[in-house]
Amino acid sequence: MLPTIINLAVDPVTRAQPAFSSVINTAISPLALVTHIKRGDRPMEAVFFQRYYTGVKRHLARYIFDPSHAEDIAHDALLTVLLRLRSKGIEQPQFLDRFVYQTAKFSYFSWLRRPGNQPALFEPLEEHPDSMDTEQHFLGAEQRRLLHEQIDTLRIKRDREILRRAYIHNETKPAMCAALVLTTSHFDRIIFRARERLKQKLKLQDPDILAALQSNVF
Figure (spheres, rainbow, N blue to C red):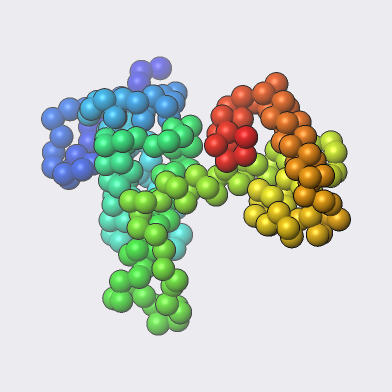
């Protein structure tokens, strides 16, 4: 089957007619996209834009009735991500898909905060972080989700409970010792062994997840 040739109507950044065409290849990994864009590969930017634009716009259209507004917000979100990829990339490229949609969500929040865009039935939204700074918010949430899933697979109930309290619910050490009726030294031994069992499990079964959680837990 011949590849689909994309002739972009506009450049994803300047919205001007681009001087190139590109080939959409869904087999291109997020890591390859991030790496090539950071190196200045403009055709790969077109692949990035074409891969995500339709999906992001469709996602936003669930909340925004005016198609032109959904298009504008989708463009702004992808531009935000693209500029980030050009300048310094993202810390965990394997999560590019989710990062794009998280950025679209924050772009929507920014749009909705403008007085003219707030329907009267909405209460004022709480303040949200700027979309240029969403990566750390996203990575924190993604790490907690991954960690929660992995903790649930541990065989020992006490391991699951102490790791959930420490890393999912962020309980303080005194609070955990009181709840679990442990001395501080006993607590230290238990949580150390629980972390080690989780680490060894991930080392054998999923080194990629271990790497993603390395700075947060181990």
